[in-house]
Image (cartoon, rainbow, N blue to C red; front, side):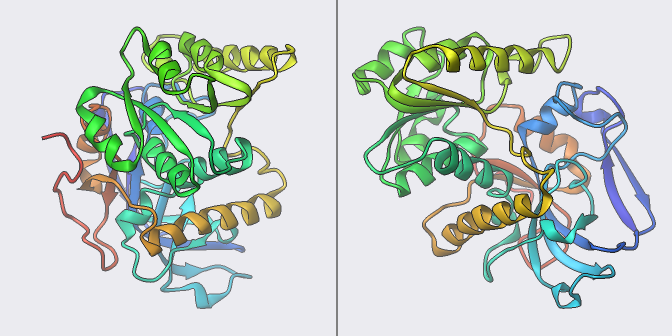
Length: 355
């Protein structure tokens, strides 16, 4: 049987429902994955409020990404994939004991890498890697500003930037400053009313890139902090998560503002990062994901990238996982585990929470 978590509508975390149904058979080009771990990302926090830009109609199964073993393959898929561990971007459907996926979306996880640790760098890792290398054109000697440097994407982005030889300034609440320093970044208080002045003190000529998941009116300061030739990479609208109204309006307003900045003669670029852009050219998109996520997973396997697991909770405790992820008390990513595989599944310990 398949067990999955259902989001029935705009509900509080305790409104999540657990259901079981027969295991599906993989169709042509598909693989059935026995899920070992799936993460709680900011996307699910928006989805439960009905605030994610292109979420499916309720009810549906959340889960933006997963790591697991291929249990069965459909026609046209190499049966040798069975029993091997892969990471998959799913957008939805990951909070389950099993998931049907397009076999082309499978990205192999290196031997010896724990499933829960690998899970922390799937959507977070590919997002950070592509923003840093494909959008901001990372090079040694740059100085960048990372908002939310203690979060899932932020902590991964800081490490990848430092590995490239980049100086990082990271915003976070004071309780997380020690963790941000440990990553190799200089922390600043995101609530400081003089935050722009503080960043200017650290980077008098401006920064070469800003990575901003917050959106809202604060995006203006992010753009103004850029040096000439710098790049603003916007990848979310966290500031409007709890604002009633349309899920599309904040994104559309942000896109309009970025487009305007790009046509003004200011010598700086503004870019909205969409992980799913280009998927219409499916084969090329999947190859790019395999290449980029493969590099992130290789860094994890070599020890050059450290996974930050905030907590591991059983799939049945997804509500607690959601509450913890929304609490702003943890560093890294909350991971839901199923008990499949050989990793430390079922360990409910909070690994990265503030004590």
